[in-house]
Image (cartoon, rainbow, N blue to C red; front, side, top):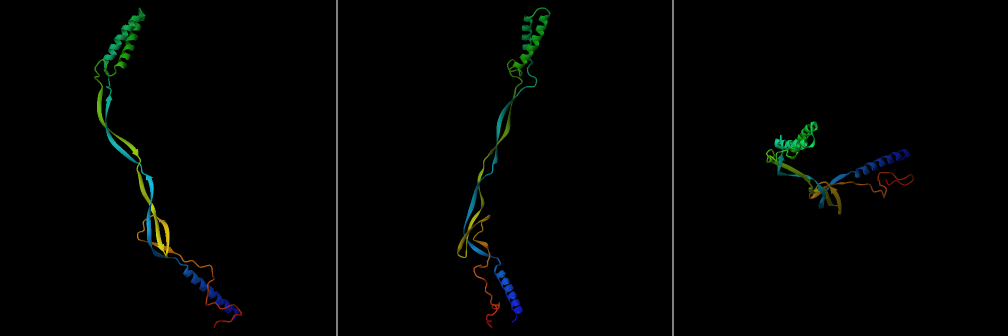
Length: 196
């Protein structure tokens, strides 16, 4: 057998080994029984609004007020102003006293409460809604620690769901790097006797 024929056979055998090794390296799926499945809880706050109705009493002031306070204040202010001056100053003092007295009298009794028996004040009952935000702590499942048994070994993984009694697993076959692959189609090295 010539060297060219040997090289061709060696190349053909090497490509056969590559095809054979890539066939063994294919991934596949299998089913493994679940040994344990434990939920993973997280303590989270989901605040909520709490509302209730409350009855309150409001008091409104009358629009015009009582003229009685202004009148009595004006008279008192005029009398006091008249006591202050004499002549033309007396008339001015009386006028200023009457205006100041009327303003003070209206402020002292804006709703007629002191002099008029509180005739213009109004009370009203109404329902008001009050609300507040309260904490709402909850336990939420964030996933599961799942232990499954495959080929005599227990493996624990975290999954976002509870898989049930079994789980699908992905299995990969890897080449053993400790020993070179053995091929029975490759001719022996140059000088060695052929087995055929």
